[in-house]
Image (cartoon, rainbow, N blue to C red; front, side, top):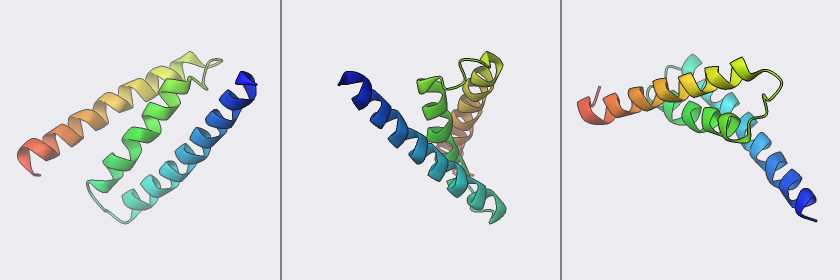
Length: 82
């Protein structure tokens, strides 16, 4: 039962990540700054948290790196209003 619940939870998060990824891409193409950062950050955190990239650990580190970049960008936007 717990396995089914976890799989359903992971499936929900995967769908959420897919939606965030699509919206983030649209925000980048439409130049809707800073919305692209606010959409991309949770996308990276979901991938990082669930570690779907267990077979490719370097991609997990890429998501951790981008999480840091997005946090920096969002912090810069909040502090400087740029």
